[in-house]
Length: 88
Image (cartoon, rainbow, N blue to C red; front, top):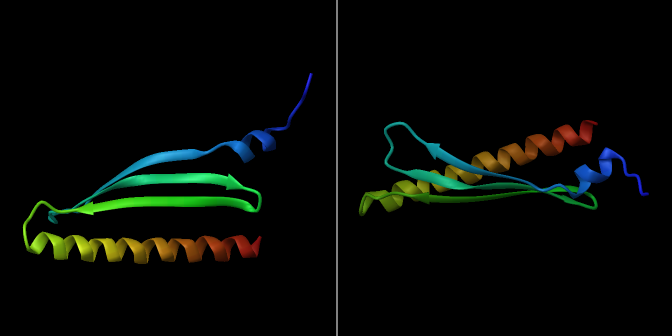
């Protein structure tokens, strides 16, 4: 028989979740997938988002604004996590 520690199981496990964001009083939908995948040096957090608006003309500009804000927030979270990991 072969025995493995729990660490071996966690190293191979991929975690995935669907995400949906509703912004109050804003006609934009944000949907996507979050995926945490183990790699040799740690893990990779894949974030895939689709930002859409059903309103013509203004909706495209609004969706682009929300998409840019999502990028800003994700970059901030990345920096926060990176700094926390460096402290450990």
